[in-house]
Length: 389
Image (cartoon, rainbow, N blue to C red; front, side, top):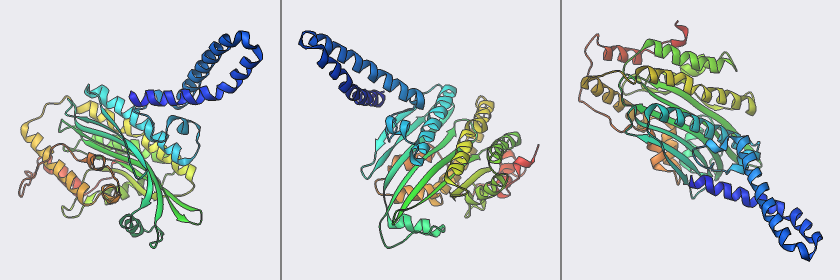
């Protein structure tokens, strides 16, 4: 609330100052006898114009329902058509809508933490912990800029990015990321991340790209859930290019593979990175469709299972699967690595994806033919879920 009041006051000041000239001119022509009336007119007109200006900006942006004041400010997001700000606006909208859905289901409010990064930019972290439905749910936005450290440049070059090694590279990054770890073992964990990146390589040349993805990690396999989840993502992809889903589904299966376990983290979804074709606006529209597909892909699954009863043994299996989640995120996840390598990174936000609890048992193996073994089999041999009916 404090950030919203601050932004409103700032906008009021801006519009009041711009209305001052015209009203002052009117007061000058009325003469000294009406000076007090002119002052009242000035105050009333300024306040009225300021209120209308704030209302108009917020109406155009749906800003009144954001979780906090945007990092770039209400006015900048409301007036700018720059891709940086378009992506930030999308992230703000996705964060607000998802937090509202999750909070309504759980009954607990999100803790909202708007933070600033001294090297440039900041973020908005929304976290719900120890809820009735969600053990931990985090929806983060980051809008950061500064200079890429050599380790980050090296990581990007390893992915095929043509970036110079011999000088400091200014960068800008904006994205929304989310991980939801439910209480009930029958409700799967979900993760998504959508981001936009720019690097200034010198001589006025800006390299840009988008990345992202959405994936599901169940502790117990429900094939209908898997089919629904994948088909929802496929529909979002097919609106833009029929080749996207099969390509990005395969990329997801590859990316979320845990080599030392010889299994995937979950049952996949879509994943893509370094996308810069066919053009900036087209890729943004695709990313928008994917981000908007998260709620219809996941919420029906959560609502279907969260009331189910479960045993202590099933809860223990969930904790073991969470252990695999931790292993992947700390050892292989590209976003976690980038966050840990970035100067001034907010570690609480970088590690938000980790569950509250996890379990490690020496040489654990599920009983043959059990539901736990069934899941493990699927994790070792990914399926074409969208192709099933």
